[in-house]
Every structure is written in structure tokens, then in C-alpha cells.
Image 1: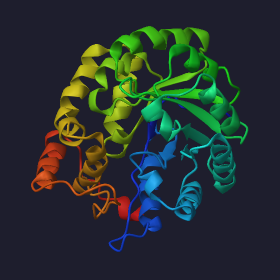
Image 2: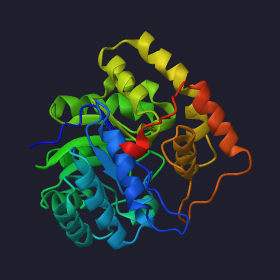
Image 3: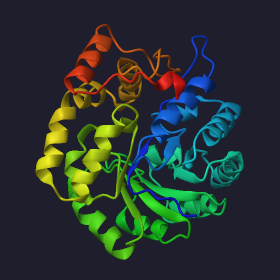
Image 4: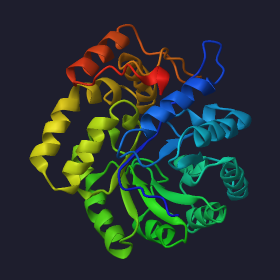
Length: 310
């Protein structure tokens, strides 16, 4: 059955024990809480927010199994292997572990040097042959691996590519390219991943694929509804409500800091009991925890008390 992307697709953090090991039990509890919220369509793990490339091979496979056993919604895994053959084998193994979707990352070298014409297409073709439904991942325009429109159209035409996660962060390109994708491939689910400024993209999307979905899934589901209804007044109200936590988590010196700040926000909501991370992530500076706690409160996000029994 095809994945329904048209809603909220959170990218959960990965939780660690104090000794640095992956805390599979706590990850399962977070997965169950997120999956139990009406409007959450999938859980997207092993990406940036989930510190996916900081996990060992065995940890990645086990985390997929834990998630697949814990919830009844599709699990989507980040595919990050460098070479196309490596990514193909990775996708097949992650499918066997229980993943049903793939967030296909670009080859790392493309960030620095750019990509040769045709290379992204063959990468997606190889991953799609694993049986995983693929998400076309559009990187920011400031990188050299942000796909031009024709490359996006070519990828969208590959059987098994059923959605796009667009993080171009260039509104000129967004306003020119998203309508073309929508017109050429009306069944392709359009998802924004502009965590730090969602409002400008909210009215053109079918759903969201965001780390933000960890800490405020309830509000983001209402945000999506407002966007689909083209109700700017309602969307703006949610934007203003969430602005304190948006600033505290995503308006930081580096988007990588946002992954750390997410855990502080989750702890402030009572969803996790520590903010353990893995290198190369670093702890936030003095005062960050109090700042984020205050932002959670100002944004009206409630403390969750039932997670332990989820």
C-alpha cells in the first residue's frame, strides 16, 4: 500500500543512555507517543535530527526494527551511503529491517563539488528498486547539491518516488519550481522542511517532514490544516504562538545546534529525561536549557505526563 504523506511526518531524535549507548526502550516510547497523535503519517528516522550518520551500522538496523515493532505507521529511513551501489545495498537492508520509505540523501561529495548530470537520477533509481518508497530530498540552494528543476522532474518520474521534501530555502526557486512539480506530477506529495520559517511555504504543501515535529506535533497538525484551507489568519496565529520556540531551537548559530536544542525542548515537555547527544554534536552553552524551557512555556506547549505508559 502506498504511503500517505499528507500530514505530519516527524523526524524523531535518537535517544541515548548516559553511557552513550542507544536507548532503544526510550526511543520506542517516543515513537509510540508520536504515532498515537492523529495526523502523524510516518516517522522518519536516521536523518539529521536523528543523528543517523552518528550511529553504527548495527545501531541503525536495530533502531529500524525497534520502531517498526513499536508502531503501526510506516517507518522511513535515511539513506546516506556514498556510492550508488552502497546506497542500493543499504536500502535493501533497511527494507528487510522494516523500513517502508527512504529519505534519499545526496552523495556527500556533491555538497562541495556539485553533481554530474544524471547521477542523482541513477541514485534514486537504485534505491527505489529496493521496494522503499522514495522521497526526493531537495537541499538548500546555498549548497552545490540542490537539484535543478529538470533533475527534480527526472527523479519525480522514477517509479517509487512518491514525495518530495523541499528545503531549498530560496523563495524565488520555491515559487517557480513547486508549481511545476505539482502540475507535472499531481500525485507527488509536496512536503516542506523549512523548520526555521515554515509560514511562507505552508500554503503550497501536502504535509511537513520536519524535526520540529518532535516537539510540537499537535500544533503543526493544526498548522497544516490551516495551510491546506488557505486560512492565512489561522496559520499566522499558530506561527506567532510557536515563534518563541522556533527562535529558541532553530534561530541559532548553526542548524546542527537545532538538533541539540530539540532535545532540550523535548525534556521541557516531559517527553525525555536527558539531552544526551553524540559527537560531533556539542552541548549548548550556559543558559540554553533555561532559555528553551521558557520558550516552550511561552509557546503554550503542554508538559506530557503519560509518556512513561505509552
